[in-house]
Length: 260
Image 1: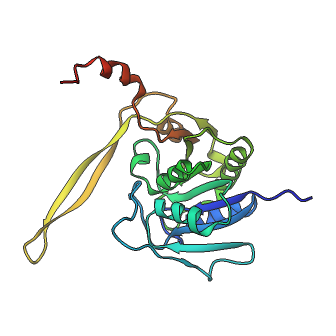
Image 2: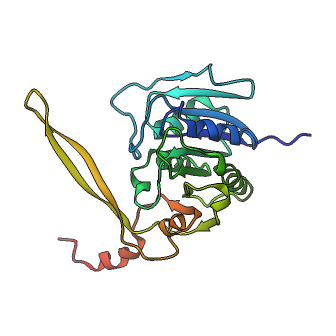
């Protein structure tokens, strides 16, 4: 009897037509059966938002799909895409969910804002092993060719070994030639932040509006972080947990005089 191929759910936050997800689809079809449910328009920076005050549409995209896979465009957020894929579209729970390949970094604090990673986290909440892939190149013409080996290798290892309940992987790939990448480094999220600035302007009607800008500042000098790995030519892999409890603070918090 022929072994059943892994069922792979693919999504992203850049939208279903983005070059990054088109590359990811090509790679995942080498590893298993693919179903794609992705936003119908860019959803970068949406974090883990879900749609609760509007309708959600999810329609087949016939110009992309073929005999080997089906694709759907969803009007909702990346997290919505995973929810509707699992509950309404797929005939069984996928063996893995891969999100990306994102155009731009999702290392360090960016994981909080990332729609790419929130889709992966939502899959993790559903009990599905999941990976978010990002390339440190924001260009719509980004070259993803050097990502192939790393994306397939990491995905294959997750399919083979699984992930602990409550853990997903955040993978960031530097913008380098394949020959310049030194390997893979598993590490932790760097202590960094965006120092933000709002550019205040006034429209012709006299109403004030703002453009958000900012500078990314890394406060972490450790050599075990995602930022260090990327700066030194490595693909960064960070295991991310979505239990946000600060467990180490529970004992001290219980010592406070909280009860009136």
